[in-house]
Image 1 (tube, rainbow, N blue to C red):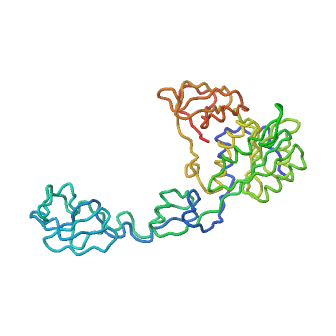
Image 2: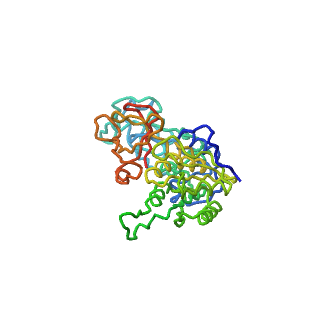
Image 3: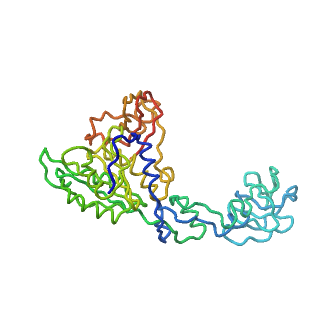
Amino acid sequence: MALPISPDAPRLTPQTAAALMASRVEAVREYELVELAATRGRVLAESIVSDRASPPCTVSAMDGFAVRLDELGEPLPVVGEVRIGRAPPQLPNAASLRIVTGAPLPDGADTVLRVEDATLDGGFLRAQARPLRGANVRLKGENGPAGTAAAPPGSLVTAGALGAAAAFGCSALRVLRPLALTIIVTGDELEAIGAPVDDYQIRDSNGPALHALFERPWIAVRRAPRVPDDVAALQMAVEEALATSDAVVLTGGVSKGAYDYVPGVLSALGVEVLFHRLPQRPGHPVLGGITLSGVPVFGLPGNPLSAMVTGRRLVLPTIAARAGLSPRAAGLAPLLVTTADQRGLPNHWHFPLVTHRGDDAGRDVTVLNGRGSGDVIALGRSDGFIEVAPGQNGPGPWPFYGW
């Protein structure tokens, strides 16, 4: 049985806690073959490789006329045209061929004279400027020979990568299977969204919000049924989730209250607790651990802002590492932004909610006047949060983490 983290252990920062979790997980390796049109946002299991040279033949880079440079001193009859996607004709001696961008350069031609550098007089071409030999021509293979990788394994399939794959004739791609992530929401006090509630009752907002935060083409999110404040029920739910998931996230029950059973249950199930409580606001009680089989487990606080901030700052980078992605490759790396004068907390990392592209002239974000970690109105108005280290003040720049 794993023991809880020692209270004498060094206190981690949000950055070192995220790095520690990422360093302890291994990327999944199972892949599947998926039709090209359905691969956007998935993680490549192998490189996208060109099946032939790029471009596959020498082509014109401009609309104009295919010529021999040495013949441009005299008017040249325009004897035909070269169409894109069709076999080019032979360029006769002392003649020119009309050509469009991307069309193959005909045999015998060595230069393309741009339309804007030419005039036509009775079917004869006259050059108004003399180009260099080889001007406006793209040589076969100048982008890369056959076998050139356009996107490496471990990267997301973007629209650009998908376009390259289509150009290479790939009708399907090998991509890693989506990570199975289970969200477990705990608490007797929570009611379903559509249920009637009294003023003292609380609807479950963490489950839907975290589902939306985590849902990506490379993550398959599952929400387990809500678990009451009962040790046996919680242990059963966590055991099932650990057996069927690549990562598990719990919300609520993670602090020091009478009904905060999550730390004890995780310890009883053999989860190695890597940190419990970080010097940050909101989200101080957050817990992170890992099983012997390498499944990362997070216990997030139950307050909505705390759950969302820790989910974005700590959980998503760990899940990206589990998928073989760096935060940058996963699109999770923070932006650097500026604010009006921002005052940090003396002993805690602070994560104030912000709107991006704020109203202050010359500032990228505006800090919202939130009223604590249960302020769901501020959460709904926000675009994310900034990270302010203890004791730091001023306009930044600050790391910005968007939802």
